[in-house]
Amino acid sequence: MKAPTLLTMTMLASALLLAGCATQMAGTVKPQAPGFLFGLVQGFIAPVTFLISLFRHDVAVYAVPNNGGWYNFGFVLGIGGFAGGASQTRR
Image 1 (cartoon, rainbow, N blue to C red):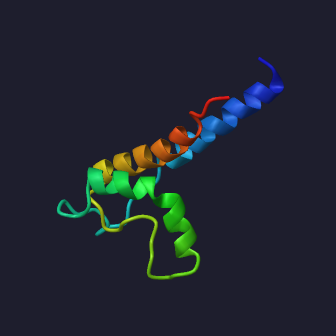
Image 2: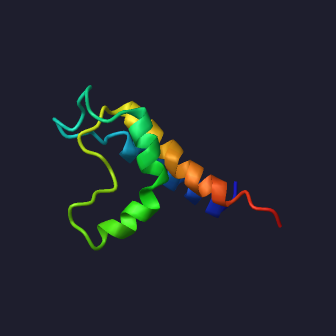
Image 3: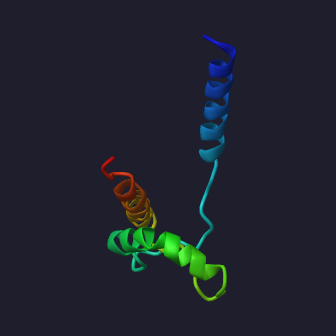
C-alpha cells in the first residue's frame, strides 16, 4: 500500500472513531418535535436558509429540538437532493 493511501485510510479511521464518541445534549431530542418530512424540507432549503441566517439571528438552519434520527435522515436526504439534483445536468 502506498504511503498516501495508508495516511488517508488512517485519517479516515481516526475521524470515524472520533465521530463515534459524539453525543447529543439532553433535551434536544423530543418525540413530538419535527420529524422526517420537516427535516427533508429543511435540508432542501438549507442553502437559502444559511444565507438568510448570516444576516438574521432569528433564522436557524437546523431545528432544535427535533425527534432525532428521522429528522437527521430527512435533513441529509434533503441536502443530497439539492446537491444531487444540481449535478444531474446534461453536458
